[in-house]
Length: 158
Image 1 (cartoon, rainbow, N blue to C red):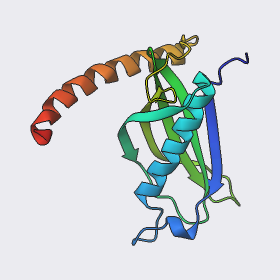
Image 2: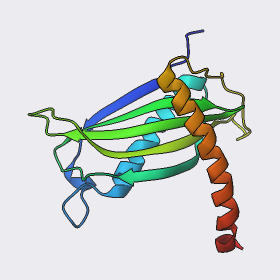
Image 3: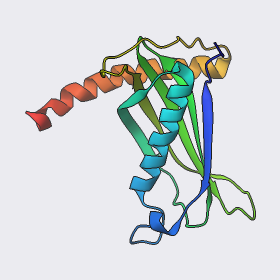
Image 4: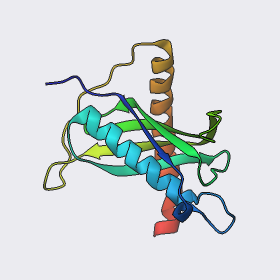
């Protein structure tokens, strides 16, 4: 078996059909690209089909213009029994200059599932570098915060 792939980068050009009424790439298009990169990363890590369980902390830092070269970078920062926590960063630039700038970042949690939709175990990721260890610790803090937020959000779903 090949070693799991921890990260992936998708690259493409932002197209006219991705534009919103303000003339910039629509946030929904960016979120779709994030989901695609998260899936590719999770599948590469686990060797299994994965589904999105959570997407959060999304920050739209700067707009993306039509014709921009877009890079969506996804990287495993924590693994549970069946979950894979992925940090994503979206950068864009004019393809003629290649001066990349951060446009969006977030966290997505994917879950590996079998053909019946039941969760399956995934290979565990162990942080090696100091940067990895910081991201791993941050992922654990974010899990605790999501639990609190989930409890607070119950008022909107009852």
